[in-house]
Length: 69
Image (cartoon, rainbow, N blue to C red; front, side):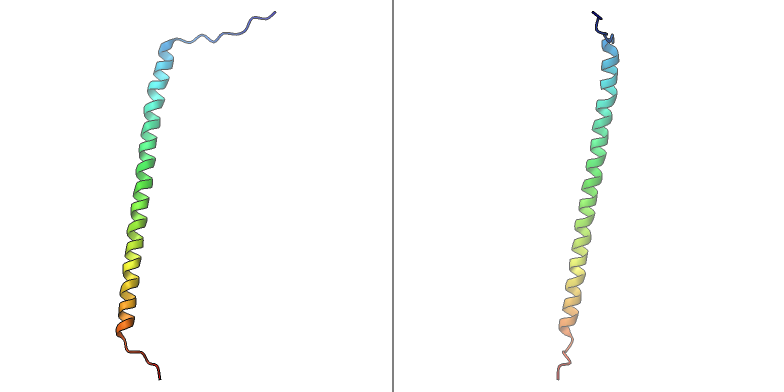
């Protein structure tokens, strides 16, 4: 019967790997969160600008006399 292969690793390599990838994953998550937040705020501001521009157009149209016969 064949003996199973055993992977021999020391604890320091695992700690080093976790110590690198966990902070890197946290940093990536923070950057993605910041980009999503910025895009949402930009979209909200653009929508507000469009709404105000549409209100101004409606007000100027309402001030003009109608040319109905």
